[in-house]
Length: 423
Image (tube, rainbow, N blue to C red; front, side):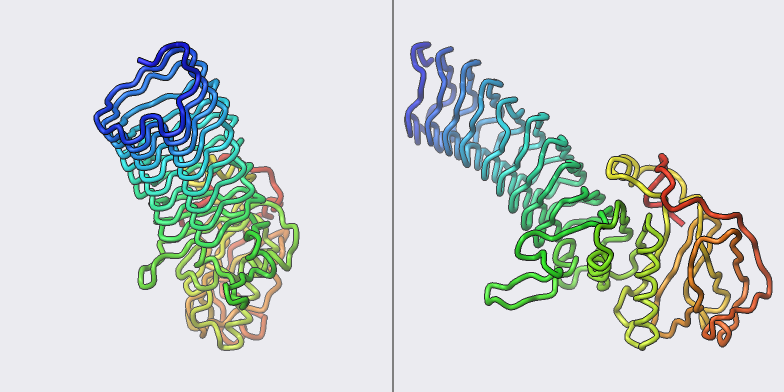
């Protein structure tokens, strides 16, 4: 028992006290110094009074028997590496006075399962939760603006992640090696190199105003250590190990377009992902990508370029709507723009109409496309057969047709529907 008169535990005060198991502090304690309980591997329990203000660097580093500790809300500053290698720690509630989680705060806390953040939390530091193999679904408040490098690196049990809508930057390899399956990237958030590599992401929503962070931003290029410019691709953000199939099935693009040229450059960076359904809420942008794919087909260079891609339309969604509904149940979009039904894959391998959505599918360099400008129409006629030669000339002949009412405007307000519908 530490007397009430003690206000500060000095630097390395109990360092390497290997038999120390329980510590009770008096009510006067305000500060715990750097490495005060460093490597006290038998320490199981700490009672901390309500007047504590600061905790120094590495204060509880390597306290491998410590299962639980709670700092009072009077705490305003927590140092680096404070719980690193506390391998038995199960949970922690961040004090209200702490806005920034420092570097390696919980690194290598192998049994840590639960972290409760509050609405004052603004930053999650470099490697803050690195190698926390048991950390379960993680939900961060919208107050969080910055996530550092390797912050959640190799958190193998992290399958569910809800990001703050006010995030401005996610650092390099921040979520590398996790098990995230569904992801919504906030608007105006810059992604670092490798930030979501080696995950299990099947469905992802990403804003059309996407940027990559400093050093990678200009023209979607990054600069190597030797000073060479290297093309930036999304495989370097969401990719998997060489030889491992990428699990991404659906990519939803949402939000406004600030720069059409830059947006197209961003979209083209997805060209090396195979058999992915790309879902848009902006018809003009989707049509630009469709035309880019068609141009590659016409030039005979389509092999490996958006291989197996499907382009679809869905209703506009804000980040909040996407985050809430992107992966929930529900139907497909309720409107279409223009669809061509392919009865012969020799003539066309795209424009598959399933009754609700518009789709364009590309599988091989031999696809022939109808040369028809796709625009919202008063009525939509869907051919049941298109002759190969006429399709190339741009005057498809109808052998039967179905007529559908005029589609809703692209900028229709969002509804509570699934962003990633199934066929």
